[in-house]
Image (cartoon, rainbow, N blue to C red; front, side, top):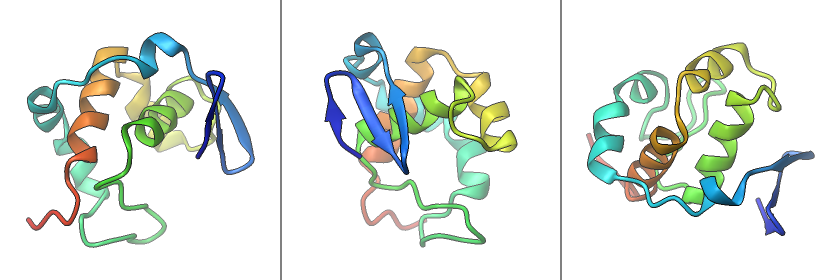
Length: 106
């Protein structure tokens, strides 16, 4: 994904993420608290059944994806429902938490 003037291009979909959201500093501890639902499907050991590994992804990628699902730009009913419940601060917190989980072992 590439950040260009507030736009992020993800899998042939242009997502205009508000700069205010991209500039938020996520609270890692709050992200860890919120992450239990994410970890139910997204596994640290890699892609599973078409569900991608989000551990260690950049904040920009994660914020863009969650924003895209929340705003129903990216089609996926399950992720649209999950992200639809998230505030901007919660998106930033989750992104900050998962970004630091490179080579995470549970």
